[in-house]
Image 1 (cartoon, rainbow, N blue to C red):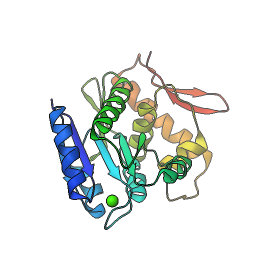
Image 2 (image 1 turned 90 degrees about the horizontal axis):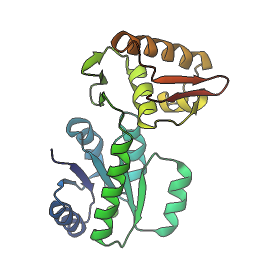
Image 3 (image 1 turned 60 degrees about the vertical axis):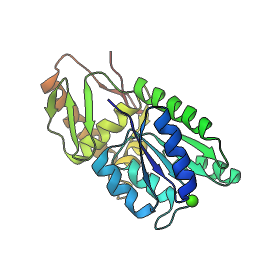
Length: 220
Ligand code: CA
């Protein structure tokens, strides 16, 4: 199966160069130049990785990254023309997987793309599949009937196996609009989620709670 890479870059020459190198590396690249087109495209085409320029017409790369993270765990590599931006980007915790500075060598970009994809592949849990455009999750081929919130919780935890998240951190992920919800909200979503997982795989415990701290995904 070909690996779809979305290149978001408004400089046609640079976009063309990246496309050529990615093609040569046997990826399937697609190019967008306008920031407004990115989120709808990601929703409908499910790329395997996004190369995202920071300064774009229509919409800023940071905003785009944040919005993609609300519904997808697709690896994102941010591209910026300013070295000093990198520190700021890292501080913002946008959820990008890597950062590349312009000017770059296309060869370097291809190497980073491969590295990020390798990391992402390792972290994909066995038997699980997430369709982020429709909030559909399947476990061992069987559909889990999840609500949007349960889906977001599950796909986020599963994308970061072994990593422990507090209720606060999870709430920020699930309710990015900062709606006021109580800690118990997360607990009750997790409870329902576990029940639905148990219906499909009774012997498999995927969501683990750590008393007084939070939750993590772990596959035995
Ligand atoms: Ca640009």
